[in-house]
Each structure stands twice: as structure tokens, then as C-alpha cells.
Image (cartoon, rainbow, N blue to C red; front, side, top):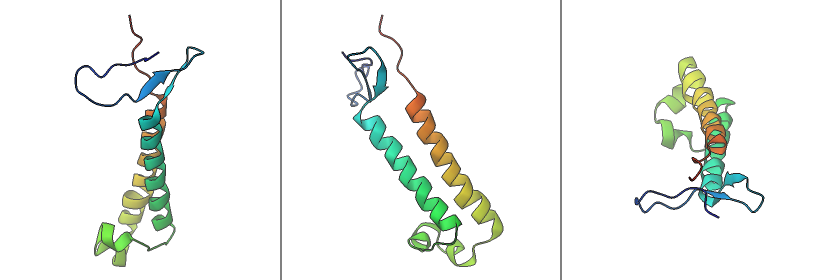
Length: 97
């Protein structure tokens, strides 16, 4: 049974209700969470000194690596990605009447 309907927007369903009656993340919710984890891992890799792909993403800051950039732009963004992943997994659609 579907737990959420996309009110005429044509978007794909992100949550479903399993046979035991629990609402669980659907395929797209799991894909979004995996994407957030991948981005968090990449930012943590860069924050720890890795450079693969950083010059494409950050341009000249990748060479200089000022402290504010590492703290906010790498560690901070990595943490925000994890917060977004947790928020995405914790969200549940409203119960159908």
C-alpha cells in the first residue's frame, strides 16, 4: 500500500508502506541518502588532505587550502551532507486519512 501520493506533480514516490505497516524509505529516498554519503565521504577525504577532484570543485582554493576553507568548505559541508542524509531517512509522509 502506498503511504504518500505526489499531489499531481508527477514526481516519483519516495516512501512506501511495507506489509508490516511501517513506513520506510523508498528507492529514491535510499538513492538520495547514498548520494549524500558519497558527497560527505569525498569532502572528508579532501579535508584530510586528499586532492583528487578538488581542483575541479574548488578551483584556486584547492591549491592554497586556507584554514577557513578546510574547516567550513570541507569539514562543514561534509557534516551538512550527513545531516541531510539523516533528515532524509527520518522524514516520513503524513498518514493517509
